[in-house]
Image (cartoon, rainbow, N blue to C red; front, top):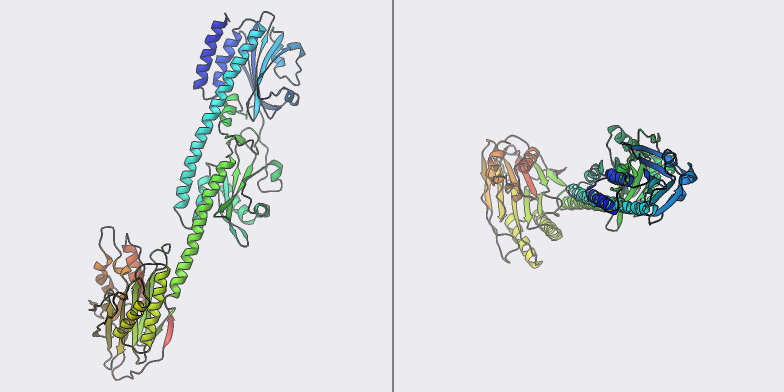
Length: 630
């Protein structure tokens, strides 16, 4: 090279190339050619090493040659371990004749050129290994100047590699953040425990790992719930492992409440279903372990230190990780990832901890929702009668649909009460609001009305006394209710006596298919101290059906804004001739299908009068009990 100015120009171009490079190998031409142009330099050779002594890559370019000699390998060179540098680059002069082939793979190439001295700079690129850049020179070379040029070239290479790693880490963090955000959205969108667990597994494959298994912690130990793999065949194998494998079960049991993610590979997997069945190829043709791939692989690391690794080549040893799923101070399960990828592409412990935390919270939310849902449904059942009375004079049935179990227990209630005179009293009501207070008021209202009606109290008086009890208890909520009695008559009909306290009016489906509304009126219960309620009387004949319901039925609203109330008479008329159970269930399901909005509970009580023969004994008939539909 003609002098310092020429080298300075070349160094400037090298820095420019480094600022644009996405791979260190892209700098090769800008490094090798200027060094070869230096007086006395006959050969430039660079090497890349991993784990102190594994030669991954060697590139050499001789003066007068247009193409470099490139060797990609995974050869172990134990004697080369002494050459590993510390944190700072080291420049060394060594006579070519003194180079030992056992520790210097460059020696054979150097002997083919006229140079008598090898000037080499060894330097560290990252935690995974080190590299060297050297030149073979003859006596005409200014060795001190060559050493300076090597040091400057190495500075550029290290800076380029560091920049690539940094950009890779930033890209990886961005991708990880996006994946975590998407995972949270996907997992939080379901409140079903098993579906949430299945989503945890699906989200992670193949973005995080090739396979995943999820276990839920039960009192008797880990319970397998979900598994997935990029290969359908291996997914089935993972499912069997998750359900039945004693090695994995023992591992999960040993993990207990350990919060740290553990990585296992190599001998640690001996005896496990994840032990490798074939070693990875380490031939040169199978390897793509060039400087470029090394830099690209390294760019996926995040500074967490070395991971349990996989061998190089097209096939990789299996690595597994186990993360404990902990939420709100308790362990809810575990997630096991199966990796069959290069070490550099394994996720960081920090990322897995974050994913496990999000998954655990979603699973715990689903578990809590499930527990609350069961509690709400159980409490709701205890607020309703488990059985309804039945004789040959009437056909009774009920239906109750919880609008949204997540909200809390509702205030709808119903009951059917046999009376001393042989009549039956039907009651249905709705307490304002939901929750524990509404449940307490529901129990008070139903049992108060039931007790009074069993004693033969007329409907109006029963409602008035309930209102008085609510006022004495200083209840903060109001409620609506309707009481209807069916009293058999000698002509085979029944006297329907109805009394309402602000509740939706019952409907009567006549045997001829016509539908009429029972005229009612009355103030809400629990609002004023002294309230009286008037009764309405009418007769119903054999085959006529009385339908009592709460406003959850009528206020089911379609997307266009219309209420189910507007079509209820038509829908009820279409059920002419059906028994009470079919009518109650059919109306409930139709209202559910109809509504696009509204989450109120739906309660129905249906009584179909079968009639009595003229002149028959009207004394109370023997009763039997049938279980209600809830």
